[in-house]
Image (spheres, rainbow, N blue to C red):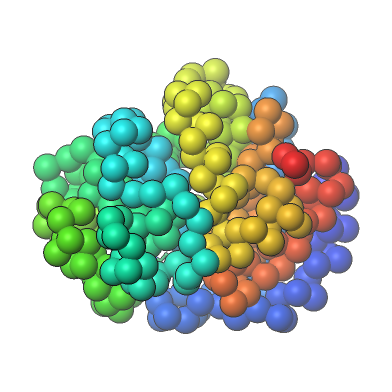
Length: 305
Ligand code: GLU
């Protein structure tokens, strides 16, 4: 299969030219837009990969999946979905518009920035650092990698320039949806987005979701079956920002993308897949990465539809 992945990566390299690296977080603008990688980790612990798989990148919005899982563990389904919805958004990932116009003011879903700020606030812990540590530890456990940590250059860059996220968080506080200290929650959110990972880490996290919440390498249950089902459903409808519908048609795998250039995809009962390519399309998804996933999904018959 490595040969097939090599062919798929080479077929789709041309698309990196059509994308742009994220620049609204200045540190992310330093990424090499030519990087492209795919890593597969299946539920029997077989691995296949090709491309720039050793390059480290920040997890960005993919952390929102694990933050949601942690919030569900800490507060349960009812309390979480009282504060954040489960509906897709056709607005940009950091849009503030619908917070104001929706009667309830709650964010549409946990994978847009406003929603992830709410789920971060729901994590158990007396302060932002404790909340951050809880989610980081779950990320480490799901990736089976205790060395995952913050890239402080990206974190500082996000913290310095994250004024749109600040606006979202203060609006949510004003509307009574979050109660804790806003700066503390934002600090946890920025740190979680700045965790540095490889494609292998993300493929392993996805393999836990593919295996109904059980780590394939140890058979330890990390997430309940119900929580896994909820998270996969929201990944399917909301995981690719405002192009989730098109992605469902083309790829058909529950997925979550991040502006660092990675897309985490799950083939239930089969495998976790990570693609990485920092050149993004207009919605903020890896341009070449989504094309690679489309081909991988067709080749291995991974669409859930
Ligand atoms: N840290 C990024 C932000 O808050 C995450 C965005 C993303 O990956 O979608 O803007």
